[in-house]
Structures are given as structure tokens and as C-alpha cells.
Length: 295
Image (cartoon, rainbow, N blue to C red):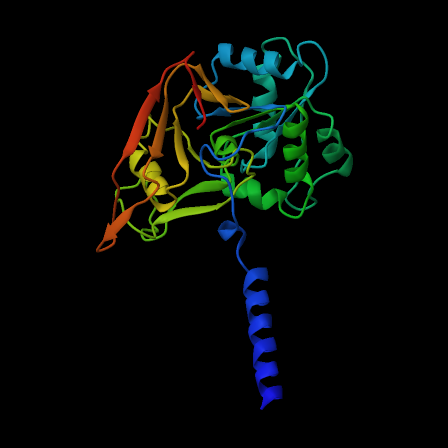
């Protein structure tokens, strides 16, 4: 009888160990807004899509220091036409007189050239173009690119991205889809449980879910759904031709329009018959030139 109890105890221990090992990354302890200090030495310039005004491009150049030395790299993998994405991204800097911006060549069949991946390790600026954020994450899967981007941010480089290149900077990355309503619509028409669709992003900014083209495309329902689904997260809606510039725990609004910040201050939500509800959600609208803490 004693041996039987020993076997049962061992079985239970192994079961607990297995559950811990198989716990999804999204259930592992992570930071929420205000919980941790940002110790990265670099900066994030997260652009909500649309046209990039010259003032915004000049700020990217200045903050990255490539007007004095170093170089920038464009990552075009969000686009269905990476070569064109490279050309347009590089051209916007060339029109300002800067020729030290280079594109990473991506071939859907042959992948990447190792020497180009290695060149990312020395880039003062990494610029992620627009397109489909899921495509970007799929195309860097199994490579060292994600880790290199995070290392460059930690070491002092500027990581800039527009549209899809903005979305990928979150840990919980918006895909644009609705789980309950597979037909595509540019904005959510519902505030429902189990509807927010997301996947893993680069996790450059943790505790913040980023949405782009925000005011232009009225994506309020989508971001509200996100912060009611994950009430510990901040929702950051960035309009077109506008950017959040994150340095440490401070944010500055760059460009021409607004940044909308939602916070679920109660850090909870409720539901009834599949509908989401919450109390104490705050909304702040920041204008170009304004600064605020990312807390």
C-alpha cells in the first residue's frame, strides 16, 4: 500500500511539472503599465501609418545620429513587394540628402543573406516598413532578426516602424482580424468577449497594445476590446502621419495628429451574454509636441 501512495505522489509531481513546462508564453508573468522601468538605451519611434512628414523623418535621423555617423537598415518583410518597400523607404531619406540607409534583401524562396543579417548588428537605425504585421513576424521566425532588433534597442539604436511596423513593436500584437467575425472589416463593429485577435510581436514595448491609422479609421472599438480583454495593458492608438517617440518611460508625440491613450484603471472587465463591459477606463488625447509618462 505504501508503494502505491509513493507512485501516486510521483505521478502528481510529474503532472504539475508538465503543466508548468507547457504553460504558454502569454500566461507567464509579464509587465503591465507602470510595473517596470524601461532600461533600454535606445528609442522607439512608432508611426501610425500614412505619409511621413519631413519633420518626422528629420527627427528620426537626428535621434538615430545617422546625420553624423553610422547607417540605417530598412526591413521590408511586412510588404507583399519587399523590393518596392525598400525603394520607397530609402527614397524618403535620400530626398533629405541621406544615402547611408540600406535595405535588407528578402527573398521568399531563398530567405536572407547572412552578411545582411550581420549588418543589422551595427545599425544605428532600424526602420520597419508597412504592410502586414503577421507577414513580418512569420518571415523573421526561425532567424536571429528579432533578437538583433531587441539587442540594438537595448544598446542605443533607434527602432522606427510605420503601420505594420508599428504594430509589431507590441508584445501582444494586433492582427487586424476578429475571431468571431472572420469577414474583414477595417474596424471592429462589436465589443465582444473572445473576439480580439492577436499574436506575439517583437515585445519592444511591453504592457502596451499598439493600434495604427487610429483616428483616420476610427479603430476605437478594436482598442477598447483589447484593453478589456487584457486589462493590465495600456491601449495606444496612433493616428496617421504621427508617432509615439518612446525614450525610457517617457513618450513624446511627433508629427501632425494625435495619440490616443486608453487605460483600464480598475484593471478588470466584466461580461454578459458575450458582451464586454468595464468601468473606470480613461481616455487621453495627446497633441504633437506633448509629452507624457508611459505609466
